[in-house]
Amino acid sequence: MSMELLWGGRSQPSRGPRPTLDLTGLADAGIAIADAEGLAAVSMQRVAAALGVTKMALYRYVPGKAELLALMLERAIGAPPEPDPGDWRAGLTQWARALLEAYLRHPWVLEVTVGPRPLGPAELTWMETGLRLLEGTGLRGAERFDTLATLAAQARSAADQLRGGADPEGQLATVIATVVRDHAERFPAVVAAVTESADDDREQAFDFGLERILDGLQALMHRRDASAHPGCEQPGCAHY
Image (cartoon, rainbow, N blue to C red; front, top):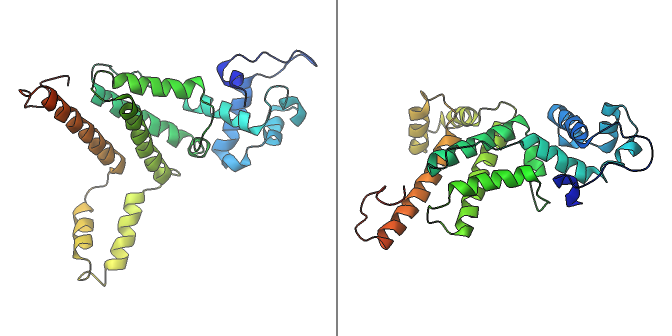
């Protein structure tokens, strides 16, 4: 795939009829199909039909479906939030929740973002935003990248479970309650957990996992501060 297509360096077709389409319109047409019918429904032919042109006409703008999907991804994820750079924890919370919302708006993005691929400006801006929040925290470069990867994995996992409006926790609790109804004595810990969760109707798996990830990062930062500054006994006495 030509990186020029994603980064705006590709010029409009110079030969043939005067261009009647643009890359944004192509991406939007593909997104509409993917949102309504899933990624498998997206093809050059379907997008061309939606735009009222021939399939061959699309090839004047994009070399093929892979490039079309890359443009769709850039358009779908949009711009990241602009969190307060002075509070890394609140900023990463906002970043991760915004990423989850993007995945839920366009569930097919989960499929497009698997495996190596060229990175466009939108994806790289999300990365830049997250990494800036971690500046000055004492995390090494690889650890900062790993932090974003872990948060993105948490968002992906939650989005995969929640797409289609599903309530995975509620469904699992129902299934478990049905299975152990006649076998409670064999699974007392399961029964106790289900019983204690009965009054909690919030979808909390994402937030719970996110908080634990951030707790771990904060503990790591504190340990390093304590090592570097022997008198630093309390969280917050150094850089956070």
